[in-house]
Image (cartoon, rainbow, N blue to C red; front, side, top):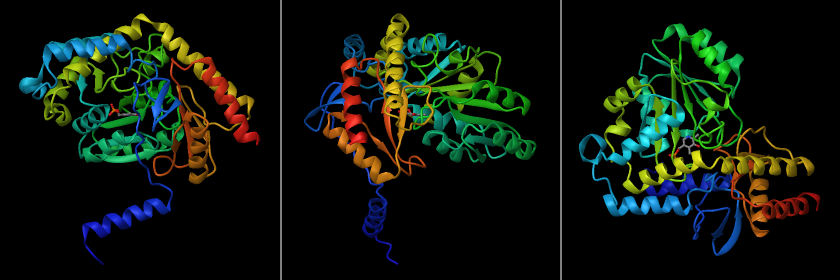
Length: 390
Ligand SMILES: *Cc1c(COP(=O)(O)O)cnc(C)c1O
């Protein structure tokens, strides 16, 4: 047994490669959009979280540029020290009013928001029930909290109820944690039932709206609006990101004034980190204004989602159930997923293969944008029919 760092790293990487799990970043050299330049070639982009096409929007870029000139590139300190600006207040008000909550708090990333919120709300005497398919930031937040963590089967209300019956009474507080749209599957959590169960068992409920914000609900406000539910008066904590449909960078928590004041005083990933940069903050404000003003973007996104679903149905290709802008094609194994992804890239499409350990079974993951054009779908349909019909 050697304890050399080099030997350890080389051996680990070798194992990763043998399992076909090795991954590397891909270089994009154009503005974000439905078509991007990837490694020197223009590809139709089915790999972006920029669902509404706002990351490359001129108005968003101009808002960021103006903030950059007015406030500089960095915010120079944590919010409680020297990093707090009017822009942060404006953004937090915009998020709270959109979500229908009393207050909101912005973080450096969605990851930081989840990690910090979970580990400041629950501690060693508490219980966390988490969906087995939850995002890494939720799972790591749960670990960091030192609460007893009990996973339940994906969206399985019977399993959740059974585990609550067994464990709930042994702990002080209980937090149920779930993605609202599951990031690697595209399905939506059964929110009304989760709320009923959380009320029955005296639990709090944390919803990660990363892939629902801007996509679900009449105004794009996310999962609560999708189900026609009010956020007030319930033990609900809504977390989300500014980095997906909002086209910027950062995360947020939306909830009661008490929740936000508590986090300002207890949440380590908000207190001990530099405030969101002026450019990112201003970009997010501009993007939220556009999302509210231009519902046609979300309508077009949903039109595109249905177009892709019809293509898969027509070709009888097996997909995972989805109610969002993420649609996954089932693959037999990691090499097949990788091979299909490369073949599609050859034909002009950027569609990532998602493999273990990120997910239990391999898949091609398509994410849709409002800015995909009819011709993109025609070309994709023809490429897929060649690949699968020979
Ligand atoms: C992307 C994502 C996050 C993290 O958000 P960032 O702002 O990118 O850090 C959290 N939760 C889910 C479900 C995500 O998909």
